[in-house]
Every structure is written in C-alpha cells, then in structure tokens.
Image (cartoon, rainbow, N blue to C red; front, side, top):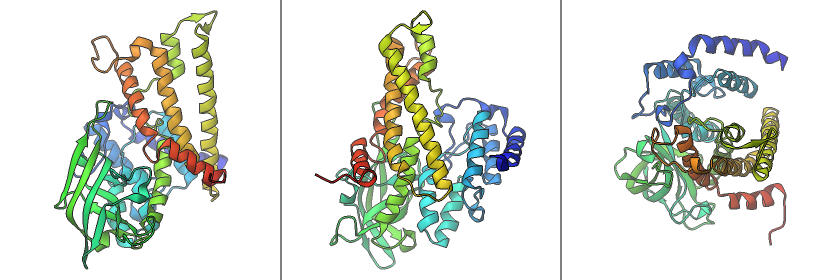
Length: 397
C-alpha cells in the first residue's frame, strides 16, 4: 500500500541505524530474552537492542502509547515485522505477557491494572505464565477445581495447575479459579493475577520427551491474593479466558514463524539429503509429499493475509479458531516430512560434533515438540469439534 511507503522507509532506516549486526544472526533458544526479575541478556548487544526497541515502543508495537506501546496500526505493525524479517533482526523480547495476557488486560482490566502490568510487560520487567489446565481439567477447561475463597479483603487460593510453561522462571501467573461452585461450570469462574513469589506458591518441572522441561505443575497452598488482582467481574472470568484463548490460538498457528532455532525447510533439506534423477527427486512418494506441503503452506499464508485484512477492517472472523488447528497440524506435518527426508540423519538426539549437526538434532527435538503443539491451546480434536459447531454450524449428534 502506497500510503505505507513513507512509514516503511522510516522503519527501514531506523532498523539499519539501531539494530546491531550481532542481532541480525540466527538465535539459539538460550539467547532469547524473556524479561522479568530473573531475566538475563545473552550479550551487551542484546541488551542494547532490547532497550532501543523498548524506548521506541516496539516491543509491543500495537499497544497504546500511554502504557509504553508503539501505538501503531495493524498495517504499520505488519510493515515493522516485514522489515525486521528482511534483515533477520532478532525478536528483542519474548513472553506470554506480550502474546496473550496483555491484550486481555487491555480489554478487561481496569486502569490501575493496565498501568501496573501492561507497562511492566512492555518494559520487560515481568514474566508471565498461564494457569489454565489442571490434572483433571485439560480440554474440558470449565471443569477446573482450583478454588479461590472470598476472605473479605483477599482471596484464599488452593489447588494446582499443570502444563504451566516456564512457571519456575516466571514472576506472575494469570489463573482461572473457581469462585462459586454452586452454579453452571462455565459460570462461577474468575480470572486472577498471582505473584509467583507469594507464600504458598510452589512449582515442579515436568520432563518432556524433547529433553527439555519447560512445563511445570504449579501448586497453591492457602495463597493470599489481593482483591485488586481480579481482572474483569467476579464469576465472569470465562469471558476473559475465551478472549485470551483467541490470542493463544493465533500464537499456536504462527508457532514456526519466529523460532530461535535454525529450522530446516523441507525443500532445502530435500536438495541436500535426497537423491535426484533427471532433475527430479527420485522418491516419488516424498516428491508428492513435498508438493502437497508447499500447497498447504501457500494456502495457510493466504488465509493469514485474509485474516489480517479482516482484522484491520474490523471484521469478525473465525480464522483464529481454524488457523490454530491448521497451523499446528502443518507444523507436525512439516516435522514428520523432514524426518522422512533426513532418514537416519534425523535420529540424532544429542552429540553435535559426534556425527550430527545442530540442525539435525534440532529437527528431531522440534518433531517431538510438534506433538505438544497440537494439544496446547486446545487439542486438535477439540478444535475440530469447535469448528464444526461454531464455524460450520453443524448439528450436534
């Protein structure tokens, strides 16, 4: 769009002048900056890059300027993202607070909550985790049992949450808790913000098949939570949760687009690892699978663009619900296709320098993680049910 051209040139010049050369290189997971009380920078350049983006408001480019955001329109934010990608600029700040909680607090929070928490997220001063799933309430989230008892000036929280990402490294957790057990299960649920340093909060990491332990189980034992940490209305937390899930599912749909790993692409891997005959991949089955994958990714890209245009023009769309399912299933398909292409070279779990490259090792680990992505934010099976009911409006059997 021509009216965005001056802004694009301005962004391009600013990035060229302010993004250090070292922050235009592929990034390992351990180099990501997540902010918070325990956050550390991988280098002085990483800190400088974060501070420049923070001061510009571009750690949260679409958020209001009065809370530290950039105040950009969706179209301008897209331009910024495109220009950063064109020079391989690293994401300066990661976090569930940016991706999920912030938009919900901006919509449902009061002014005091916005001033306290939105600014801290933008400035990298707080790191958040999500307290939704419980051992007995995963896909059926409304069956949660973690309770918050009204004690007058505070809530007393007891129970546990599971699959809380990086809870052992976070400063705050946003939780769904049951505040009224005597009504329908979707009612009587409230949305609380809990300080992870409060007495009675404990986390236990959960080892994963991928070799990492980024998930935890989080326990609450008589945790006192101030009443001012209630977001939205009492017993109306389900509305906040549904709004936040839209952002989580959008994140899941785009999960492969901002990976810090040096992710292999199937077409490039095919050229390196497969045999060719007469200019074509010799294995017809893999050749067809690659074509189908390319067609799928082209369709997903076009749908993403359509959803972006709909959002920019205020059109309500079911794309986030559909794209969560499509995006995570596509990531799983990609990982399985890569393993088929790499053959025995895709079986390296560890041992860089002992026969496997870092990319080969990452490919297997990402394949293992791709299974979890089809569960996080609502399993693929649940997503299909929702699409059938809410999008296609099919009758329930």
